[in-house]
Image (cartoon, rainbow, N blue to C red; front, side):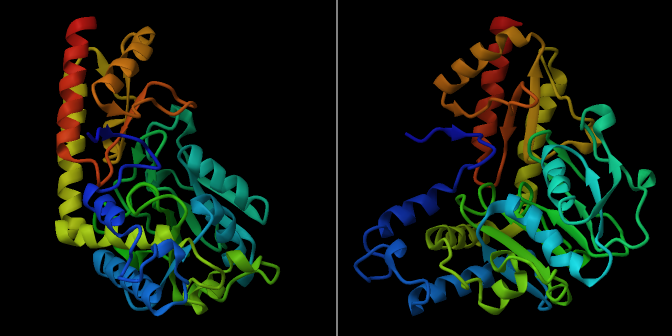
Length: 359
């Protein structure tokens, strides 16, 4: 019996996708072997790659002047790829908003290759809110402006898209495909797969055509977006199984009603949990109300000596991976697309019972 998985990543995958992959594992496309054993340049796999891109373009309404790349290295690899690819057209200066652990890592990598201007930071309140534009101190000559729309660890989400004069770059690892995105407002969108796209091992990069010729001359070939774009993301052997599974997830999402349906569902799931937490005197959310994530819901118990008991009993109840990140403690429930409403209902019921017995 499958349990409810609230892991922040690698996260839950849709059960129909897993079942299809299971059925096709030994004999995919009638070839008598697994998709993992087929050349990435074979007609059969090229068809998989092309359909995955078409479906993702449909889901996000990606304009024709953007390239869609499927690459390796995770979002962390893109922390380096971004300055490598965008610092070559002028001054090596970039603007970043610092809202938590992932923004911090992105900033650290960018500083290895140029100057970083932190336009705003929420560190003053322990990364519990998304800074508004009235606090920004932008550069006049920034090559790009980077932010993290959803901080997985802290559970902070931006409720707006920054309006800037340079290319806007976003790490959407924890929010992509959970709602419609105005792609045309961005220069680059990137996302590690292991939350809303598919299994770990593949990363999606959506980049506007005019930004493909701004790379530093010494950029490593494996990080060069133009090389990847010109090769159809197959300059080297890609992670084919992860690409195949991502394609199945895209098909599943379209069958559910697309990102519009996911937006409605994610709001229902997160609101159910936040409403219960706010009514409780036993649990609390550390994140300011206007910045609460729909994808990642951190919460703490009034008595942290009960944390281990809560985790032990929740796991026994079939509610997995609720332990908060080691850097912040407490609990965290990640409510990605593949986490059903029933999982959140079961979590709230367990939390109510635990409070009744221990409050």
